[in-house]
Length: 95
Image (cartoon, rainbow, N blue to C red; front, side):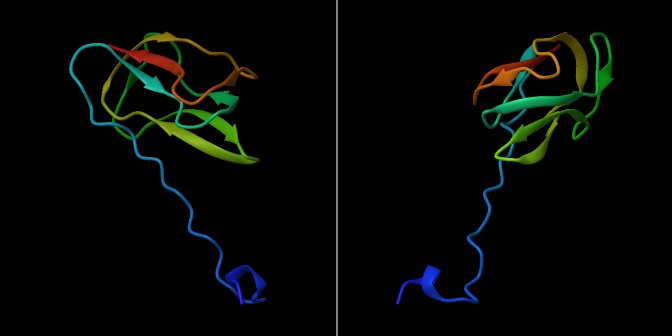
């Protein structure tokens, strides 16, 4: 009997996407998944802190917060609301 044939089988574990280690100098915040940008919560020139939500990405019918992995100043926002992005696309440049 396969696990999916059991009516009360536990759900498959979910994958947690962790940001890469912070670096010095300019760095880009990249999309962890392909999806659509729902909301942008910062603008150019804003100062952000570690863990601050920068934008919301819809991927696989779920909303995912894209959080800053380091403190810095937003140098540029590379996407707009409604844009489709691929995994690894640079969304924001921090300096």
